[in-house]
Length: 135
Image (cartoon, rainbow, N blue to C red):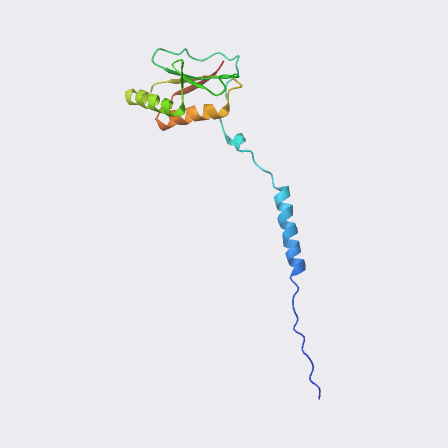
């Protein structure tokens, strides 16, 4: 008697792998990407809105410059400063009083990075009474 050759039934994985890759591609293409800036709640006021309160002499005024020569320049007491210097100055202000109001003046075209840098420095020093005015 001749022996029958037994065939090992093998499952071909190639079509299954193809389907998995197609599903991955489908989900990657169809997923809705969320914009990180849509989650950032930092809406600056409109330029024509009147300020709700006048700035007093005890407040700190920081201006963010705009223009060809002043693009992103931070002015503290009408003097140009870097972020490190601003941090040092605001830490001295915070040592005096954490309730000191900080007024940030910027234009609609001021770079967002400079505004975020100033807000970060205020937060790190515990100055939470911050107002943003559009010029």
